[in-house]
Image (cartoon, rainbow, N blue to C red):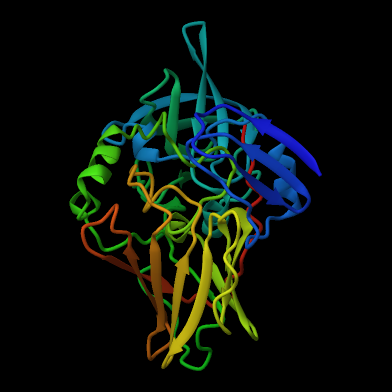
Length: 367
């Protein structure tokens, strides 16, 4: 088995990520244990050998979303890959050339908005507006792009029209299509919906609050390059999910990072050793609602990139309920982790049904 060592972050406990015969050894504060319940596409294997950089991160933590800067220039490089597309745009101010590094939305979202690979081409002269970086000069997170033909692209769901009334992209769904006969087993999209919670007022213990206060979203980013997220963080991903009935197992496909969660329906499995980042999940039916309990989780963080710790004693209880008209999947998750929360924390959000929607290969690439 091939082994690659990474020692870029401090050591908390040694762990490894098994991906179809390739084992990546990690020594870092943000432990990644064997991904025995996740399947990663062969294309992701190529990424493992790429230089490791911060390929996925908090947008508001890395960029200043309170400001919008605007540049005009020529595209000299396009990387059309998840988790964020990347452009290099060369500006010319009275003979002084400057290269701007621009990242923006995910291919998984842009392609569904009708913004395809080739819409932005090397050599195009564009106008671009975006959030400036908090870390480096001449770096931004692109929101609006004005193409040479006059079309304006909204590259992010936060963007609004800047130069034209008619734009491409940026759409958010408000309702799903109705079908009461399909049940749970189909593709659902969260379309970037957030939990109905104020993350600033979670009932943290003193130790968890101290860990959160010390967390630096840029320097301590747990979403390292293209390494997948663990539970419960992965359930915040904005892309489609799909439930597949496999008899004694239900497979929950997650588009982001090409992951599969395996839910055991005939009793609890033997604990995975060492714990996987997705944990061990056991399911049962409560009427028409799928209830999933997950324990033995080898992921050090609770929700998002907030620095809230998660301990090895954490227990997650999820409920997936299809509405009567079949247009919406109501999702609820309760976290029980006494070392982190003074009481159980329950959050919820909807998924919507869109006929014809399919899971796409994520094929994460850093660079």
